[in-house]
Each structure stands twice: as structure tokens, then as C-alpha cells.
Image 1 (tube, one colour):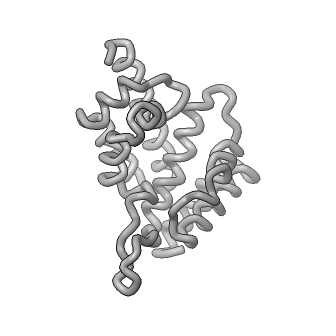
Image 2: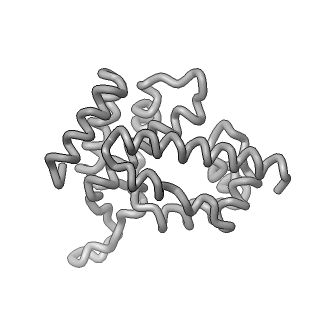
Length: 181
């Protein structure tokens, strides 16, 4: 890990966190935004992130290419409930690992996270359709509860078609008036 890599990674994750905080504020879940991704500053995640940081994609991809898995990602997804990968458990009837429907507030944070990540990695080329395009590219291979996937896709489509202002207004009102999706 170089000093340059550490600085680049620190800037990238901090910019991302600040964007998520701003998006969470727009969605009416500021408190969640303030605690978003704090584990990225832990040694397990930060040092690997700094080692594989390019500023153009997730450093977890580089770590996977080097080792066949990402220790940083395994640590991260186990501590951050806004990742659908956190929400798997063994079905008591089938005894098979199964996706669990995420609570609404974490789906909202996941939406904020995906929009922010697209903005950070796409920079000036960002379009409101980018988070949806990213989602759709891997949809067939994603291990996520169908209702969670459908609701997230609904939000991403709304963003792509109606823009940020309308989507965050909808999400804020939806969170205020609903406990579930």
C-alpha cells in the first residue's frame, strides 16, 4: 500500500460517504446517512481498499482478481445492513441459504448508496440512468429477495425517467407513510 493509494482511497470513500449523507437527507433518513459505511475506515477494509484503489471502480474488484475473494468486502457486507448481501439466512424449512426481504429503511439507504457510487465512479459522465444500468447488468445473477429487488428497481427506474428531485420526494413521502413495500 502506497501513501498515494491511501490518500486516493480516503478521498474516494469520504466523497462517497458525503454524497450518501446528502442523499439520505433528501430521502428523510439523515441519521442513517451519518452512520453510512463507517466500516470502510476500519483497518480490515481501509488497507485493502488503499492497496487496490484506482478511483475508477471498487477496490474490492482488484482484491478479488488478486486473491479470488475480497476480505474487505466480506467484512463490509457483514456490518452494513444497506447491502442486500447482508440479508441472507438459512430457511428453517428447507435449510437452504435464502435471500431475506430487507426492511424498507435499508432499501432506501441502498438506493442512496447506489446513486452516490455511480456519481463518484462516473464523475462528469454521470447520468440518472447509470444506477439503473448498473443494476440491470447483474440482475439475473443477484442473490436478492424478489420484493427487495423489485422495489429497488422501481426507485432506479423512477430516477432514470423522472430525475432526482421527483424520486427523492417520492421516497421521502413513501418512508413517512409506509412501514413496508
